[in-house]
Structure formats: C-alpha cells, structure tokens
Amino acid sequence: MKLNQNVFVHETDRAAMEALQAIPGFSQVMKAFLSSWSEKAMYIENMASYVRISEKQFPKYDQMLKDVCAKLGIEKPDLFLKLDVVPNAYTSGETRPFIVITSGLLNIMPEELLPTVLAHECGHIVCHHVLYRTMGTWVLSGALTLVPLGAIAIYPIMSAFHHWMRCSELSADRAAVLCDGSPDHLIEMCIRFAGGDKKIASQMNVEAFMEQAQEYRKLVSDSKYNKTLEFMRFSQATHPINAVRALECYEWTQTENYRHAKEYFRQYQNGARPDSLPVSWNEKSFNGKDVTAVTKQLEELGFTNVKAVPTTDRNLFDRERSVTSVSVSQPDWKESDWVDRDALIEVKYYNPGTKESSSRAASIRMAHSNSWYAGKTKAEAEEELTAAGFTDISFEPMKDIIDEFDRARNTVFTVSVNGRQVFRRGEVFPKDAKAVITYHEML
Image (tube, rainbow, N blue to C red; front, side):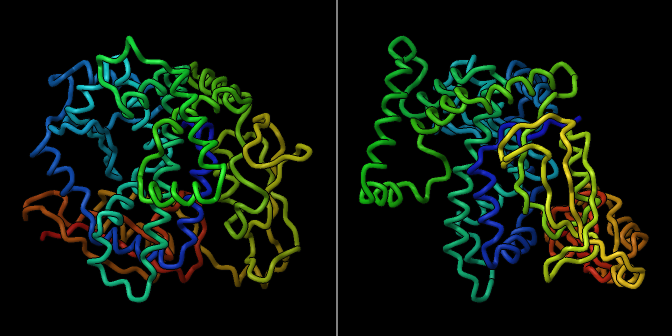
C-alpha cells in the first residue's frame, strides 16, 4: 500500500494547485514546457558537474536518504552534492527525480538535521510536486518568454506558480515532521536557514523564534497597508518566510489532524492498514470524472467501502457514467475531516438507463497510467494505444542531448490524452480522444 499523501498535504497546497490549473492558458504552458525541457539534459549536467552520493561516496548521507525513503515508501532518488556557498537543497526531474544539496548546507546544518532536510525533499516526491516544481522553476526563470504563446497572460501564471511553490513547501515540511516524530528538528532547520550556522546551537532559543513569528503574523494582519507591504516584498518568493514556516509546523502538531496523521504514519510504518483516513475532497471535487476511475482512486487511498450509486439527475454537460457527487456517510462531514477507513463513500454518477445513450457513450478505458509509457519505444506506445481503441494518435519530437547510439533515442518521454499529461490506469476517455506521443529525438 502506498503512503496516502493527503495525510500531510497542507490545505493551501491543494487549493493553490487547483487555482493554478484553472488559469486560462495553463495547459498551453504545460505543453510548451514539456516540448522544451529535457530531463536527460539535467541528469547529464548533474553527472558532469556535481558529486553523486552513493554507498561509495559519502556513504553516511546515502544511508540517511535510504532510511528516509524507507519511511515514506518511495524508491531512493539520486543524490548529488553541489559546490555552492548558499545553503540549499532542491528536488527536480520527473520519471527519475533527483535531489541536490549544496556545500553551504553542510556548513550550517549539523548532521542530525540532514535527515530532516532529506525528508522534506522526499516529501515533494510523495506529494507529486516534482514535475510542477520543475516546471515552475522553468517558468519563473524567464524561459517562458522564449516560447510563442500568443495572447496568453503570463503574469497570472507566474504569480500563481510563486504562490503554489510557497504552499507546497508547507506540505513537504509536514512530511519531515512525521519522519522525525516531532517538529523540533524542522524548527531548528528553519532557524539555521534564517540566520545561523553550526556554532549557534548553545544560544538558540526556539521559544523566542516562535514569538518572533507570532509577532510578525500580528504585524501583517494589523492593517491592509502592512499586508500590502508583505505582498510587495514576498509575492515573488518561492519559499515561505522561515519564522512563519516554523510556526505553521508547530501549530499543526497541536491539532487533532496531526494526531490522526501521526497514528496513520505509525500504523503505516508497522505494515498495518490505517484505521482512519483523511477526506481530501469536497462533494463536487470529482464532478465530471468517470465513476470507475474515481472509485479506484478512492480505494487506492485506503477506503474499503466505496459504492457507486447511479442517478438520473444530471447537469447540462454531464455524460453517461460521469460523477455528479461524492459524499461520506458521516453527519456534517467536510474536506480535511478524518473518517474510518470502512466509512461508506457514495459515488453518485449519471446513468440514464437506456441502451441508446450507452451506445452513444463509446469510450476508452486506459490500461495504464501516463508513467507506464515513459521509456517505451514509439512503436510500443503506439501499439498499446491502438489496441486500447485510439484512432487519433500523433507524435511530437523532443530535441535532446543524446548521440545517435544512445538507447534513449526514439523512446517515449510522455503521452498525453485529450491534452492531459497526467492520467491514471482505469480512467475513461471519449472514443475520439486525441493521443499525443512525445518522444526523445537527437539534437
């Protein structure tokens, strides 16, 4: 069973991502990014310029990462050490994510805090942040201006990326807190990022740092003018303010949600099926999606009593078997509540009940998720999509830094269906949906 990332996803992270994806032009930006960005080029740069940490090279750091990945139930990503006086760590990539830490980080962080840093970065992987954070870095670097996107308003997308990237850090912080078992190391990490090195431990005062964060929060909330000043100063930051970041984590550990999350994580570590799960949706979150895909998604989250309920009620644009609502058999339930894993989850979907409408709703059910296609040959991907029933299949080359003998040549980078780069096994698409295979091509 995979770790349910909703156990620790910050509520603003989810809301900010939904807002980002809803901005007009976002899908065009995603397409431009996927056609211009090369994961392999990043890997080549890492291998050429940085030190790869392994069992043979800085093995203690390699073991730290292995321990964190075991807790979070993910494969160990590559870890690189970069010569840079600025203390930093970041995660990038997509099909093969990697983590980079800087020499400056090792200079300010004592070794007992390095697993916290690595757990934070692995938290991004568990939350499926990595592709979007890589894309955000690409967009915010100014690369977007080199891509012809017509009349798309760039500023709202850049602003939304800044906001989401800050919110995503709060989710990764919570993953680190669960791995550590308390917020203590995360708070100390924030203090050191704010202004300390290895020498300040004897004079470090966590309570004073928390008071500083509370005073800042009060200062900003006291007036609209102060709030405006905050926006002007930090709206283009990609990370939250260190003091507030520490306070956010501390306050989370004082809530009932944290107690649920900690118990979930304990049971998960012991290989047991967790007793309760977080509700990570509202009644309308799945509207319009295929009932089979939604049911499967909820079961993968750990719910054991998911029932599909047909209804003839529909909105104007509802298709047959599209979800109209998802509810929990618990009075006054709301998003972010925790419920028993066997609580009844009702997935209502539109079913007109006529053979005529069923014949009109010809569809294709995906046998694989989007990640399955990565690394396959163009021919393999085309054969699989044709067998599934797709008749509109096209190819888009992605120029890459490879030589003519490289095995990556003509292999699939990603497959999109109806403009969607991310889809799950079991999801249903219209019979006339367009499938696009993006593949590696020699530069």
